[in-house]
Image 1 (tube, rainbow, N blue to C red):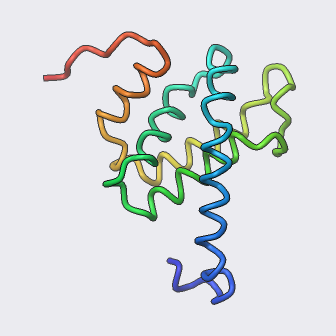
Image 2: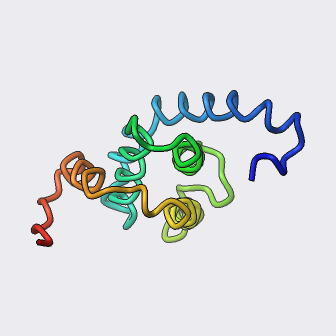
Length: 127
C-alpha cells in the first residue's frame, strides 16, 4: 500500500507517525478519562491504545491505531466534541474504521488492560 504513495508522502510518514504518537501520549488518557462516561466507545479506544503500545504489534497496525487515537485527542475535528449528542460521532467513526482494519491484532490482553484502566469489571472467561 505505501509503495503506491508518492515518494514525498512515504518519506514524511515516520515524522507524521511520531507526531501522532506524541499527541496521543500527551493527551489520550486525560481526554478519555474525562469523557469515558459519555462515550460508548471508551473501552474500544483504550484497547486500541494498548494494542498500539504493545511492542509486538506490527508498525503498520500501530500507525493506523495511533492516527485514529490522535484524531480522538485533537481538539479540532469535523464535529466539535462539545456539541451534545453528536460531538463524538466522528471520533467513533474514525476509531471504528481503524479497529475494523486491524481487528485481528487487538488481543484479549489489550481488552483486559482497557477494562482495568477504565475500572470496569473483568469479562468472564470465554473458555
